[in-house]
Image (cartoon, rainbow, N blue to C red):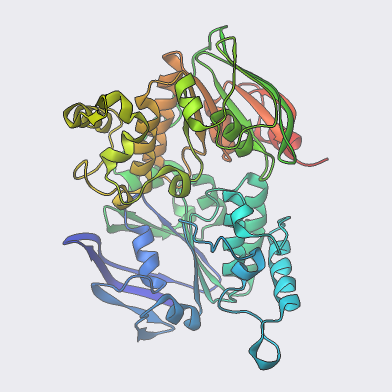
Length: 491
């Protein structure tokens, strides 16, 4: 149905996608795999008309074609779900879903009733409880991801390019998407699927193509590969232990949260974290995980309850209070709340610690540069120069830069909200090792993750939230995915 023939793409004289040929067939899920920066998203964006190729061409239904814009690709029958979410925040959910394909009545007026009905139907297909009249800016990252998926499904496309579609979703929402993909396959739709989650690949894919350093290294049937072979193709080496060993935490309670409440998001949430412990918050989309950790960091302060740090009650009204108390955070929304895209990598790293490099009101650039160099080396951030705009880095390197910023101030409590969202297996292994290293050094880690294997393998204990309340506190060493999901599901 769709074929890339020797496609090549250059940016600033650097070839990011070397001549690549691959074909996509109707009724098939074709997975594109590779580390961050391997060229997967670049290839998909060429196919979707976002980038013009610098070499090669696209064949659509056997005929050579050129897509001058995403609109051209959409009109041909190619839709894309982007890794970086691109909603229009001041439009409603229904308006975002039907954008560019609005149902119209007489005189070209938008039929609002039909628009709401179409949005509701597509959201129901994904088993999502999101009201179509809601403004997009009121949604969580996970809910925004669901809306983006619904928008693509509503295009009635023959090819759907899915770039990390489940990065922000919990297991329940992922299951709903998989059922929708099965229906699309039965209709003869070709699915091009990119993910960093190994279990998804082998559940969904019929064929797998692997890119490494901008080059296609292999295309094979999924049943000819296993996770270890696939990882070796992706990174060029074996990753023996993706999840490092956990050590026992100390008995000292570093953080105690008691009765934390902010209706309607969450209520009466209580838990404790000890030094050297990784405590995970688990739950379905909308359970209140991000809202709870945002309260502890002062992004969205709670209306009730107490936060005690090192035995002392503290009041956190904003992130400045949290930083002063010794609390650091890497937020879920890397693009919206984490990065300053136009600034360099180095400036992003030192952003929250500039006072440490000042003499009075004068910034000591030599001291700042030394700190940047140390953090870039410590966290193995791959950048051509500290002044390189952080927007040009791969997702994994952006995430490592944000971790470097978080830890520059040496916090005692580190909040990690979806720290491995949208990054490859190699970068994940590095972040997992860093989390255990921090725990061994006596830091307390509060982890939010939608990937249950990650939660079960990293955490010491798991607090399961259900509809804003604590449903259970589990020992991660003795529980399993089914038990966590049973507590997370609404009664």
